[in-house]
Image 1 (cartoon, rainbow, N blue to C red):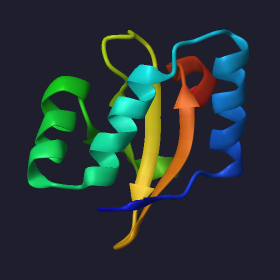
Image 2: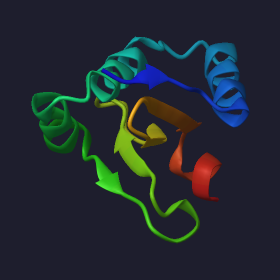
Image 3: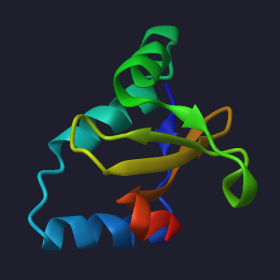
Length: 96
């Protein structure tokens, strides 16, 4: 089990989502899968949420789609003990 470690940018992203009245429930579900850090949870992230490793500026980080919410992404990286949640938002917000 990993401990959550949100970055300041992630906290701002979350605040922006709440301000737009976005239901955060699906994000919580994905975050729990990441924190569980089991073979089963990682497989579910890959299968249902298109989890993949990023390259370039984000090398070493992972990205997945949040539920079936279309263009809603979560970016994070992990250490032995932490899941560092880096960004959450649309593709344009994060990479545009």
